[in-house]
Length: 175
Image 1 (tube, rainbow, N blue to C red):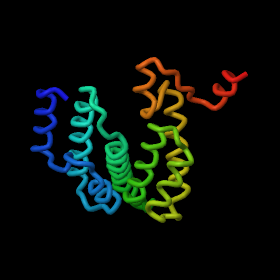
Image 2 (spheres, rainbow, N blue to C red; image 1 turned 135 degrees about the vertical axis):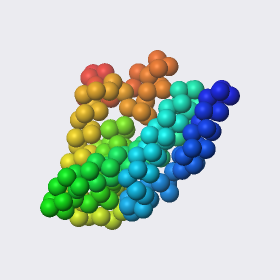
Image 3 (cartoon, one colour; image 1 turned 45 degrees about the horizontal axis):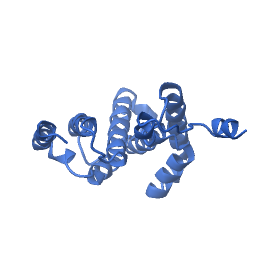
Image 4 (cartoon, helix red, strand yellow; image 1 turned 120 degrees about the horizontal axis):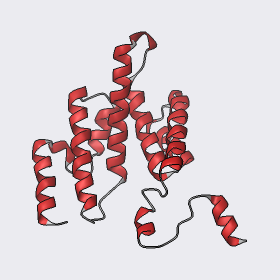
C-alpha cells in the first residue's frame, strides 16, 4: 500500500476507530443490537471507504470480515428502518443483521448453501431459516445477474486465468 493511501486509511481509523482491525467485534455488536443506528451507519460507511482504499492499492487485504461487517450493518439498518415505519410487523433488526451478513457473503462468493449453513451454524438461530434463505437466494441471483466473477475469483480473472463460474460451463469445456 502506498504511503498516501495508508495515511488515508489511518485517518479514517482516527475518525472511526472501530474500522481498524478485523472487525468481528463489530459484527457481534450488530447481531446483538449493541450499537445505535447512527454509529452503525458511520461504521459501515467508514469501513467501506477504508476497505476500498486498501483494496484499490493492490494489497491483498481481507475480504470476508469487511463483507460480513457491511452485511450485518446494512441488514440491521434496513430492518430497524422497516420496524420504525411498521412496528406492528414485529421486525427484529438483529435478524436483519444476520440475514444481511449471510446475504452479503452469498452475493460476493456465490456460495449459496455455505452462506445459509454458516449463518445457522454460527448463531443457532433456526427460527430465522426462512428469512436467511430468502435473503441469501435473492443476493445470489442478483450477483449472478450483475457480476461476471466473484470476489474470490476476480483477481485471478484479471491475471488472465479463466475461472468457470457455473458448473455447466465446466462440463461444456470438458466435452
